[in-house]
Length: 370
Image (cartoon, rainbow, N blue to C red; front, side, top):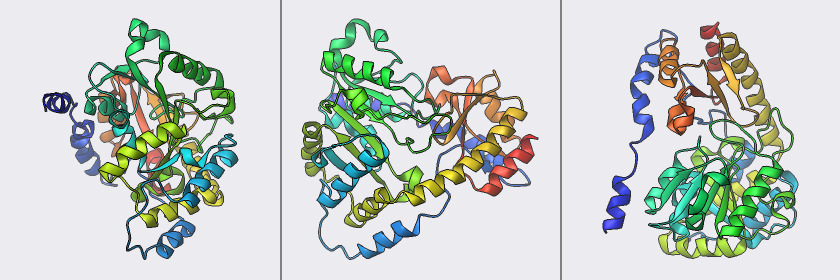
């Protein structure tokens, strides 16, 4: 009880609450708000996926926590076809109720607790930090293993995120291979958040942690986390999965069975169809490419510098000033963005600009920054 209470009291305030006053100011703009603060898809869910959901809607029984064999085989096929990961064992695939759920609960599912360290990037999605705290473990922001120092023996989990949210940075094969080798030397699990991997812009090779060039052909101690929310406009479906080491997946599965953490059967079918259809993903990527070009040109023309952003759904932009000043400046023009400070101290002079808005709203951004 004491450990649980201390973990809860150690949780940070929900960061988005701080953004609310700026949202109100942006909404007061005569032309309405251009909300680029949260990466929420706005385009239609593909018909092929909706049809699959409808076809599976007669679902009176309980679904399988492990997912159907057909779903797990479809995910394995997707990894081979799209991610350069041949031979993924379908036994090493586990559907999850969105990716944030797994990110937040993975340290707990792995049995980590007080005394354990969870390493995550210095500029990072806040749920890596929160997940460690929920388990009673200690989050450790670090972009290199050398930063961990003599505490390496306490590391139970290492998060990598490529392409990064929020920066859009892509980690190469050599970098990821070094992380894997180091984690294996200290007995830690590596979890790789790869949710934006289909959205590469300035880079062609976005390796998975399960890529043979990275892991040496063995998935031992490795998990890749993926979501179809962005590439397939399925955020409302909560359709994601983890894949990698079958031994690790079985450990997670046992806890999830007890906790009732199961993806609904109709969503499992929708996910199976989504990962098997590449055409709708390519179509959606082109929508985002066009919006990115407009938003990028508008920001550069307004005096911003854009760092990284070679992949993903965001532009990591700066004016060389405190991020909240930038947020305020844009809110006055009816534009809402996310302050980089939400993602760590190293983001204090950046803002994250999402591409998940309609063509009309992206055009409004360009007009207001001109």
